[in-house]
Image (cartoon, rainbow, N blue to C red; front, side):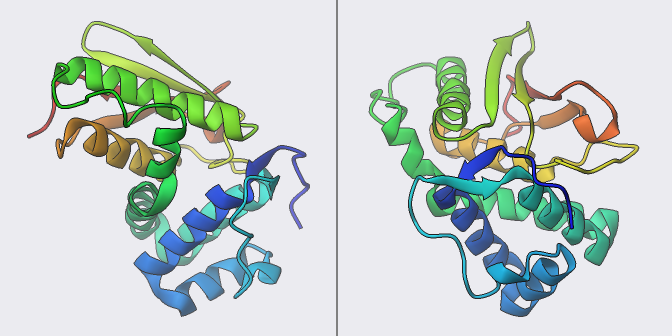
Length: 208
């Protein structure tokens, strides 16, 4: 059993992620993953739909590791990306309105500003509602999104970045704020491979 981190997501975020996993891999797939992650108590018993900080980062990381173990690095990556995207689509977008991201007369502001505001709103959401602290900085061609104490790779070790769930959430979040555009999101540093924090570059020029 993985040692608990003592850092927490709100139940609601964990619930949204588990429901998104179910959407992309089916009930039996999720059941197998939760057994492998040694969190069988979650089978058919997802966290309640509330903001209490009770879902340990260690359990979240173990679920990610189990997906990769079960489906291999490539298959695991695809599933985690899809689950991250589905998480945002299913409910994390609700949090946007909590921090004012959806009220900003988004239709009329320039795309670059939408992306910047959207990323800051996502970082603020996780920082405000969970023990995951996130920050956004800006370079010439890309934004730099840093996650301190990342739950996605908590307790994992790897020779490459593994936070695909976070990449999926960022991709879908940007799609939402930009009115349907896709952006390249690349994880350049990952705590699982020994870096201090998990760092993502979001390139300013949309792919479409």
